[in-house]
Length: 194
Image 1 (cartoon, rainbow, N blue to C red):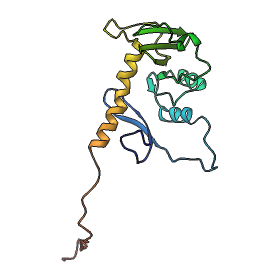
Image 2 (image 1 turned 180 degrees about the vertical axis):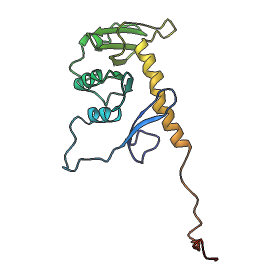
Image 3 (image 1 turned 120 degrees about the vertical axis):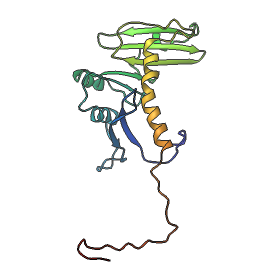
Image 4 (image 1 turned 60 degrees about the vertical axis):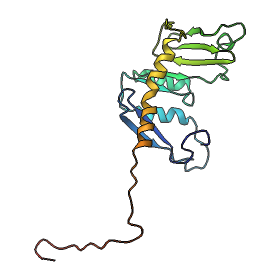
């Protein structure tokens, strides 16, 4: 992944605690399926796999994990979701995507019975769209940037994975070698002296 600090490695899907960065479940991404074709609804499968066994929690994820069916499956398990949304999705209301005439730090909300969408406009030509099944009201911070509560919760909760990545990068499991020399060990039985 050229855009990431660690360009090479093994991709692992992780569900971890937002406060302690404790890894709840991990799943190694092995690439293509044995059938050879691309996997359908991979994002939904991954989220359902790593949240198996959880109830009454909130999942924070990025815009890779998008699906109406995923939201419904998580709500059945009493799990809410906060995530970013790609702006090219046809189901987004055009009023949330329009930026002409909007002032900086303004927010627009859209509601359904189970979902809240927010469009936050931090600066010119920058529109951030998030979806939440946790939030039901249009709460906005009274601080300088007037960020919606959905965005503040998203930033706060995604720190768990960011911190886990940092810890994994800081602490290595590599071991020093003896420079190619092999040490010989002698094994003795308990009854016999060596």
